[in-house]
Image 1 (spheres, rainbow, N blue to C red):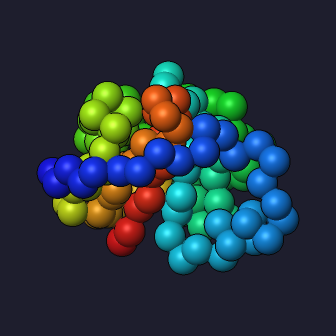
Image 2 (image 1 turned 180 degrees about the vertical axis):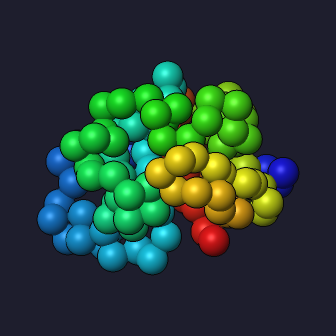
Length: 124
């Protein structure tokens, strides 16, 4: 796993302008924002496609509802929040009844100063 220094980011997605929301939803990769307790705060359109689930079923619920609680994704997110730096892994297997078995690369980065949320991106 690789650690990269990170600049301070806005603490929350609240007040996001429609144009920024459109950009996030146009990204060709799943993007998920979680809080310090790993509850989902935001998902883009591609996340909904990847997890075969709607925004209302994802936002406000624990990330462990989407991926197994022992997934390396939680380690990446924890490192991002604790070390205030980005971390990535290029070979993570995700397996659930809903999405099947998928090999992804993942990057987690902190949001806020101090970080209170983290952004997770997945790439197949």
